[in-house]
Image 1 (tube, rainbow, N blue to C red):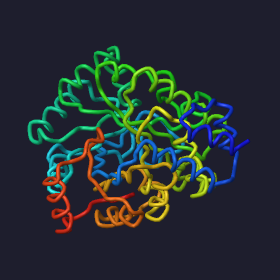
Image 2 (image 1 turned 180 degrees about the vertical axis):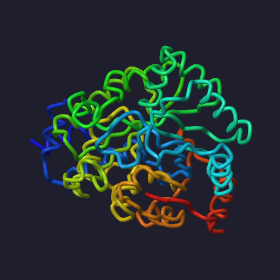
Image 3 (image 1 turned 135 degrees about the horizontal axis):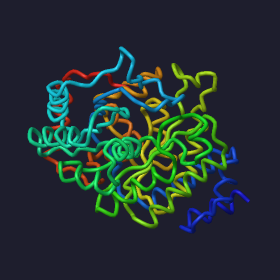
Length: 375
């Protein structure tokens, strides 16, 4: 049965939810990986595999939501809450540009005090200093939160932020797009339909975004497939997702630390099934950030065509105790060792020109300081 389903997916035929679940129940990791790699080769017959250079800037850790799986957030009353001074934020972007980066991934908590104008001014400041930088910013939970604070429809919020300089939206805060799961481990945060609607409206405005899945906690295998089905259905409607990234829940230092880690086997299996199921999303990113170099590299043989980001800074996963450090040379070598040419790309999966790529490699080899690098 599994072999028949794998052949079906490799041939480009769409899997049903029940068929996806059948694959996810299988422990034949080598067969799943081979099929996922065959699909990747069909979608990406080119001789290269990609990566990008960006920085994850968490402008605040203050958050009104209570997420049992998050070690990063602080309540509005906590004396450990912060908001990055504007000067420090701009310095971080300047360092990113010096390292050859063309993007920042900017996310924070659900801050109760900032109105939409505060975020518009933030975007204006960044773009006035760094017009070349793409701002990949504000996850759907944040954007939905903005509608509540400002009492504005999501379309108005997104139109104003886009006008102010927002370039694309990260797929953060998806976890598992099933309300039972979301309600079971978070309070005060966007639920499934509203998360998807933020992305739908952004896509209708001509925007692009990524989409994620954090698995290995309280969800069932069927709910992982339900997540993938919801993502695939929205992509069928809008075509706005550029890439899918999944990773296993990191339980340390969270209120869910009693749960065991999913492990590398489960990560590779889930990514492979995701590649087979998401037939309308071209790009899959490896999550070396949570898995480390070797499994992150192996992920390129289990459905991923992209090594993800050098990520000059990452704080959220780091708070959960997962800190994998990779240099640009390590990322490029990981790709080369598998017989591919490493190529730098932007968030829209457009290859950077050669001159830009040479500059970025030279800048990184000068070993400018890395800050809080958590894979």
